[in-house]
Image (cartoon, rainbow, N blue to C red; front, side):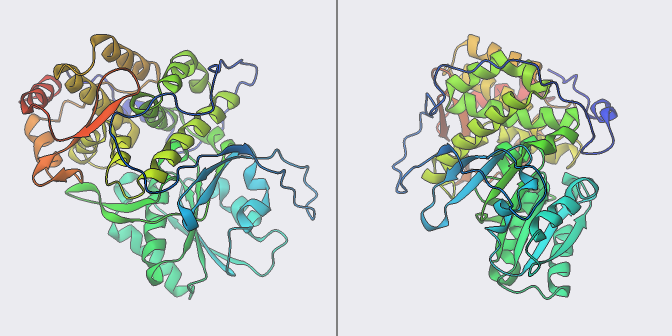
Length: 439
């Protein structure tokens, strides 16, 4: 089942990670009858030792009294409940124009903004202004890294440490990640390591980062032999999601992030998946109401899981549906050739196919997954270069391997249910690999 998806063709949309575009604002969004909490849960059972609390409320309107700018809308707030390390996720338009949101999480006088060559020209000056507006005691340094998954490595990470040490930043400093998932992962890992740990803040500017990677404290870098093999769990002080930053995101990056949105519906939130089936055209059209809802619902799902299982000892692993196959694709073709969400989409189809071969789901769910990924303009099979042996050798060093057994996230039962298990018939895995790749 060779893939007809071509990343090189997709790159023709733009050669930058953000670009200006108009967003339609006259489209009506269909919401489910109830959106208060996910309607279904993953089949994996886990005793939560941390009280679960996911808040989706409207915060008090934040206004900078010293600014001449018009007041902005209050953000939606989703709380990640981790006891004394809990933190808010702010979601809304124009949040980079609300200085108090960021400044309340800066505890010292020194800030280092970590960004990349694509995002810096668009949002670095605005971010620095927001950090310092009415706050002359704060000084801000910045380091601009090259853009792309292929630079998520130790050599690039050292540039962050070089800047921090040269600037003589102390333990009260704050690192700010301004960019997509690569920047967030590297900045977070740098913050976890510098002086054995300093504060950091996430300002994600891509769909992928806003709905997934900026939340939950996973940080790290890639190794040539495997993706995200070096890193740490390290939580931010806050996550600030200014949805206006999506205005400059190219179509390919936007679609990549939708793979993670779709994942939440498949593993634990059937009602959200059904909403996506109805509203995918609006998400692709960048309808702001639809996107704000999709980000909020995704963050609620992620926050709830992280609150139960911060360090992925059980239920949090289910958030990796399709990722074991997808990470093998990213590693096999070379980091940056396929975007993370593109690889996850193909990997999700493979995981769903294996679930069907095991008899755990019916054909109708397989078809729904195929359809929604196609609607989202995502690939539904891996690139032709991938062979069965490539998949097996790369997956053998996956982080979810335990005692030599590859554990996978597979769908089981009705929509919204899944399992994280190594107890499956190896024959089903072999058949899936042969169906989607060359021998």
